[in-house]
Each structure stands twice: as structure tokens, then as C-alpha cells.
Length: 82
Image 1 (tube, rainbow, N blue to C red):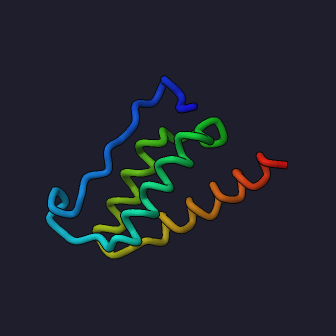
Image 2: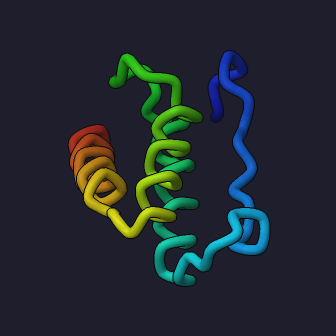
């Protein structure tokens, strides 16, 4: 269940960004958005800001932040299941 404190962020498609993001990157950003909202309590940053930083980096050709955050959130999700 999403935290009502944070409104869901719409990931705009590449036409709105004025650049092209690969379909793989868009899928990863959507996954990041889902996980950041689901596990918001484990972070001190608004989930929307995390997603915005990831999108900004991806637009500029740097997906390190996106991948690092996804790795962290996948680890949190894995631990939460145990």
C-alpha cells in the first residue's frame, strides 16, 4: 500500500523529456518508483525526488544512481520478505 503522504509520480515518456530513454531504462524507472514508494520508511528522501534524480541522470546518460538505488531497494525487499 502506497504511503498517502507521497503522491504517485507519473513517469513521462521520452517525448516529454526531449530525449530518448531506452525501454529498459523506463522499465527500471517504473520499478524504482514502485519500490521507493513501497519502502519509503527506510529512506530519508521523498520517493518522488529519488525517481526525479534517476530520470535526470538517465536523460544525461548516467544510470549509476538508478542502478544503485534499485540494488539497494531490491536488497531491502529481499530482507523484508524474511
